[in-house]
Image 1 (cartoon, rainbow, N blue to C red):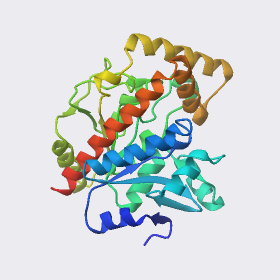
Image 2: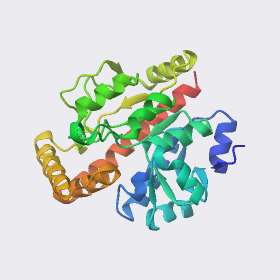
Image 3: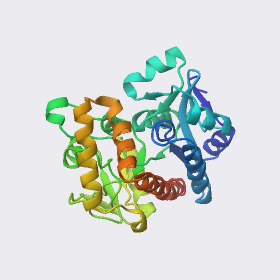
Image 4: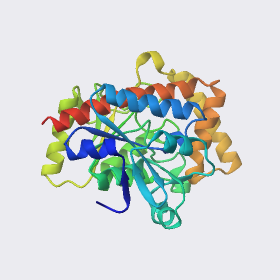
Length: 303
């Protein structure tokens, strides 16, 4: 047993018996949503994964270990205790060394999942290339992680606050397949589609499971990014959300908000400017991704 891992009994039992397991990140709980919606959302996502035949494993960093599978008390601690560090690859060793309470981003959840032997991970939206990258060089570590850690990530596209064409370009450079689930175009988080055409499409979970199998057999080091459009009844129309995102990005620029603080600021600003509609959309797309992630994990284990 890896001393850096503290795996819950439910998750350990699933791993020992080759049952499907789905990893979940914890930044969405600590930094992505207000309390108590964050706890409700986390519990509902876990239940959706169970209802679809898999075992949820929410990942966080507590007391110098990766916690793989959180108990209720852990969830509450993460959702309400302050401060909670937002931990990406750069911060990982320091947070372990100091025993700091940490929430995992896409990058660090992938690292924890891979160490535990979990193949599928569900999130809302991945990080990516930030707007204005030609001046800031601000590119999320999530993209490099996808290029080097073999975990399949299910998301609703990159967060719409980002530079989507450059994000796709960067993923291509890193050799990461970006698969549209039942779509030919990149979903843009709050909206079902964008103008950016994808090279890969899958219409069934089994097709993605087969790709995972062959990726492993070929010894490819990176992950697969599955982009799953938000259900139509929950999307925010392009024309409405684009203007709001532009206003939020402008305010972040004026206030000099950069780096890992920019995403929480922008998401909170968008919640404010949409009168809470974007928060509901964010929750619904995570639920939708949880269902697909469980189906992919199940299809993979049944191969």
